[in-house]
Length: 188
Image 1 (tube, rainbow, N blue to C red):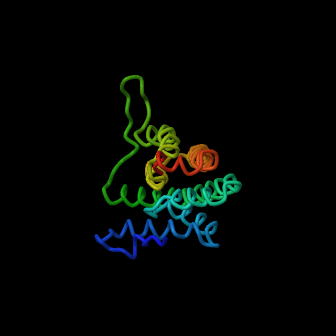
Image 2: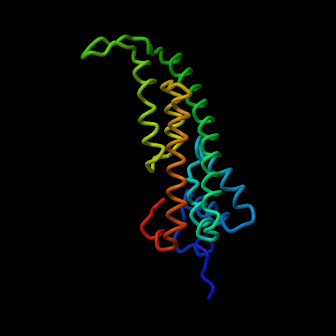
Image 3: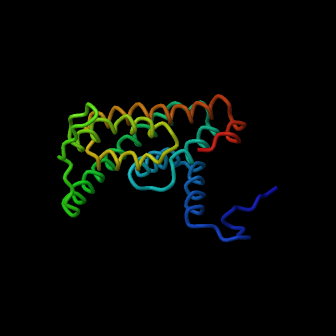
């Protein structure tokens, strides 16, 4: 029994985002699925609106034994894309500070705190970056935001490695070990 494609049966017009989402998901059943996963993971970490899990979930469901290599490939690509987002955030940071004439060297000396605004943001934002790398927050927001508030690169890298590894391995592992029933309750 042939089911009509959501793209072919326009009972209601699909948004540009839904059409893009469906096209990305359709790539999971092609022979270029792994390359698409790597590309989408990398671009998603900096600017792309569709998360890589749209590809990862059907790929693992189709070939459960490859769940770990898929998760690792997505993680590595996402971290590389995160560096692109980080440097994009750094450029935005430099431009915004110059354009808006913002001084992050203002010193705060209250409540036992003795640091500049820039130091406080840069030294502590990486914990938020770690949490948001695991949670269903768009990683591009984390990457660009880390660059914008000048998180030290080594701390951003640590947050990205820990967070993205946990997220990709968790999603791929759930799909591998719980199969199609998990897709009903796991919204990626």
